[in-house]
Structures are given as structure tokens and as C-alpha cells.
Image (tube, rainbow, N blue to C red; front, side, top):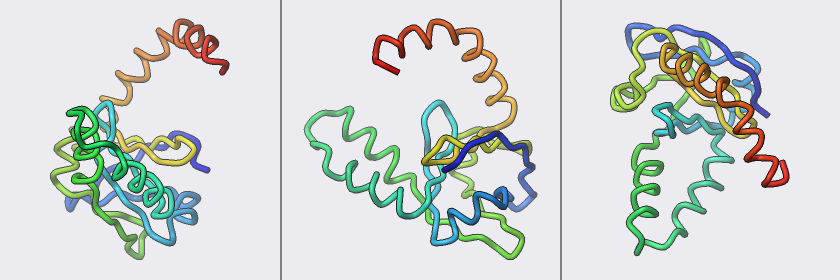
Length: 143
């Protein structure tokens, strides 16, 4: 389970240190891909394979399902940890998520999200301001 919020810096080569407690969960492999809201998603290999199977089974007729599958699957990259617990974020993914130097890694139960720090702070402030309305809508869904 991934939870928490962690600040890190990307090095000049595009490498990102992943918190030690998460590396344990990711030791059998990990996949990074384009996420939603202009961040990256980092999945343990096992979780990724389950999601990829679901995406591959989406009907190809509707444009939205094709677009979402392309976003997630074509953007995916296997990542490995170096001796210092860092992963390489490919340039095309850094560009997609506007990641330059300062990064936030957010744990969201079954995945990690990797954000540019400035974008994360803007998103978080906006979401916090709408938290009552969000809670109201989720209450209607039984959450």
C-alpha cells in the first residue's frame, strides 16, 4: 500500500530517488506511465499487469477508450532501480508531466503519482478549496 507525500529532486540525468519504503513494494519491477491531471503514475509490475489487461480488453470502437488505452499503454516504460534507489524518468514522460527539478511523490494506495512540485501545490490547493463539495458528491456514491 502506498500512502503519503514526499518531496524529492530530479537529478541532471532525469533520475528520481523513490522513498525506501516504496522500493520494497516495487522490488519485483515497476512501470511508469502517463497519468491523469498532468502527473505520472508509477505502478508495481503486478498491479500494472492487472491494469494493462483491463485496458487491453476495452472495446476499440469508441474513440475515448482508444485514446485512454493509448495514453496509458503507449506511454508506459519499465523502470529499474539503481544502487541508490533511483529510477530514470524518460524525457518524454518528464515533458508530459512538466517535471523539471522539484518533484512530489504521492502515494495513492495502489500506485504512486509523480508530480512537478509547483503543479502539485496548485492542484492540492484547488482540491482543498473544493473538499466540501467533493465530500458531498462522494457521499452520494456511498463513500
